[in-house]
Image (cartoon, rainbow, N blue to C red; front, side):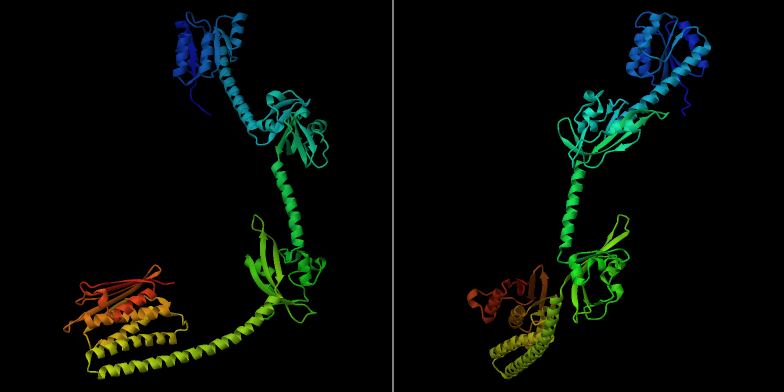
Length: 604
């Protein structure tokens, strides 16, 4: 409770009376502020928010009197005002009745009368304030309720309506107040099309809460119709006597439509499930069957009556795995989804019936169903027969085994051919090497070495094809590193050079690797032959990497470089240009500060 000292504004034009009254009021335990005129009292109210009550003399001499001042004060703040006067005439009392009802004290009525009047005025003001707050809260609540609410008296006459009730009935409260409730609340049954008894009459008759049946339609003032739900209850006082009725109703038109759609949808899907070409079985959490459609009954060879209540599997059957072994009970579709708490998709199950020697194969899909609290409600298994498909797959599998055997034999034959081709290439390479060593013609010797280098590139390719099971793609890194090793061995007697390379491991098509190998061979052998005269020590660098979907090759040397026009190009440079076009790539030679060759082409 607030223990602050309350403040009284004493409005009195007689100075001596004002001081004496202030002393007396202070002795009651109050703070006192003084005003000698109506205008001064108004200014005090504006400037002093701590004032809790006004003691107002009616006759304030010149200027406005106490009643006029009181009216102005109440425009500024709602405060309890007690009139303090020496007049007891009826005219004076009537004058203040319309202003405030917090007290009228005749001066010199005594200390107790003054004290009690102030206390009662303050208490009465607090009580009025609380009552007003309560009424405001109830009014706001009533107006804010999402459902339509109408209150009537015991005669069925409307006393209150909230905005939602105005919307649904089509009647404004100002129009409906005092009218009979039946006039604004016309209802009928949407199925029978007959009028429905008004719930208000039943409440007044029985004194009990009454609800409307389903399918009730309200006809508004405009003729618009609403599906509604409704309840009506008696309003009782503290002694239990019925003082009126409150009717609460809500628009459930959309909900009604949704329920109708759901009902139609359920009927539609019930027919769909019944006529589904796949089998469907519903299990309880203990795996007992609660429902099976006709397709499931036909596939399983039992009627719905025979299936209902059975757990997981009929004893006459034996579920089998794809490999033909007996399926353990824990691996039955319904048991798997309950155990794993997960959806099962495309799960192959076979079963034998006693009158069939071959299994029936079905492909199952299953899932558990849970409520909002994750409690297991049921499990649903659907399945369709795939016996013909499985038999066909077994037939294809047998054919595939024969095909695999043929492919294996073909692979052996291809490897034998690769081996023989490689041996022939090695023989050619050896003959070229021997012929070059025996030759005294330097130009011929260089040409023979060039041919040997090109043949070695082919040998490296056949080596990779021989050891690689994927004959359509070859490792660039392995192939080029072997090729560079061979070039170093072949040309080391002709020139003093080092090969430095950095090659990313990329797989490319065999057609690409052949062209790439020849280009690398031609560029490097050109550098060996022309870049390092007079026994100059040379360095040739090779970089190959993948840039997006492209392969980028850079070959550079630190030789003397040379310039050459299109007409002077020899076989090697023309061969390079031709192979670059086959790769659908782009290349460039730069012959400054040595030779720099760049090639870029797209790979799949």
